[in-house]
Length: 209
Image 1 (spheres, rainbow, N blue to C red):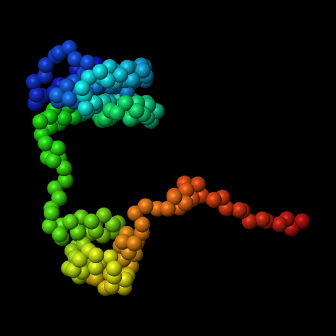
Image 2 (image 1 turned 60 degrees about the horizontal axis):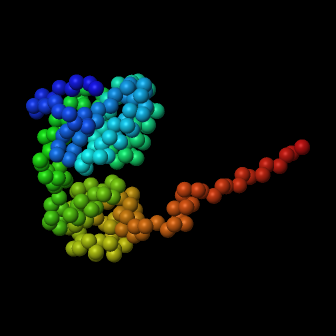
Image 3 (image 1 turned 90 degrees about the vertical axis):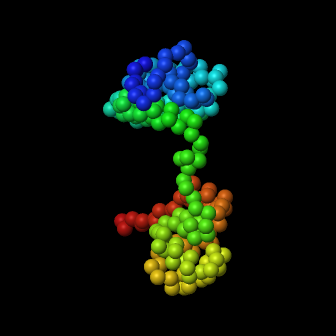
């Protein structure tokens, strides 16, 4: 186990199952990818030891210290996903320490501290909804909001009326109209065709001989 210096907090050594405790119900394991290549069962064994605890958050701080990361990192990712662990990758021990500092500093902070600030007035909510459409910016959203009294009215107008708004070209109008009128859930047949497209028959070329 690497000795990682965590400066802002006074660390204590104790007989605990995880490598680090970052909260009352949160813990962290340290893993070097180089060590994982030598001992591929180590991570699985360490995570299994945590199953008897009361940890709601189990972090795996993975130090990426090898050049060829594709195969070992895929193995670590699969193990973390199966064991309900959160994988955090770092490329130096200093970066690992920084992650520990951040998680520890948020130990007693409320969840809404890191949540996106969402305004509750109509125009802000309308802007947030419209800007999810590709190519639509905040200016376009304000233009649409000022030209149509309600969002329902915006949904019911034809494309010509949408195109009359300043700044909305054919591409933006097309994307808006599709977003307004396409079903939220695609039919199962369409999804199946996208996943397994029908083979196209190649044209038959006759031999001139």
